[in-house]
Image (cartoon, rainbow over all chains, first blue to last red; front, side):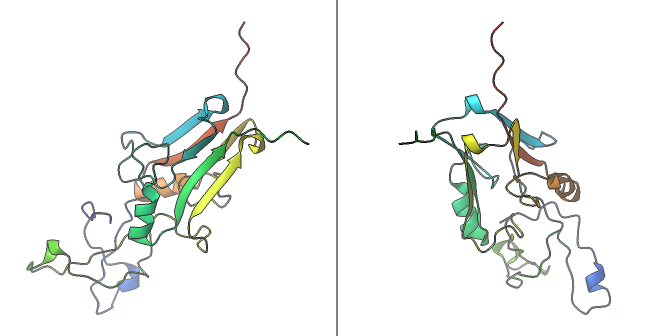
Length: 99
Length: 99
């Protein structure tokens, strides 16, 4: 669960104007809580020749301790949030030779 | 900004117990708002032989209209949330032959 530390404070959103309820607008903190936050944009470039074989499993949930590789952290994330994210798998197994 | 439609209702978190303030616990809605939500887990498997050349750019922000490929949607997401997510690039350009 994201901590709400960095909310700029409750803001009365248009949807709440005039409503009796106290409305808190939460500014989404994005999807990457902690990976390489000093970088302006986390882009990973991989050469096909450098791909681990036979399969390379890449993280897309931004919670892997082995980022950019997947370590299964999406399972815990999906369970905690009801999300359905999963990895990208690059399969380097050569196609079987025609019989 | 994530809409707060599906919050399970304000829950008094331990951090708020006994405090005068009204504390709303927002259950993170995960990071994938709309891609293939009927699937239990969105996993993409790509064979090296099928990789677009010379470069394949894969989305990791879960907002691309061309998912699993990147369409630059991370720029708007990062700007709106202060996040720093970016794509995974698989480069199929053959290594230059030694001189």
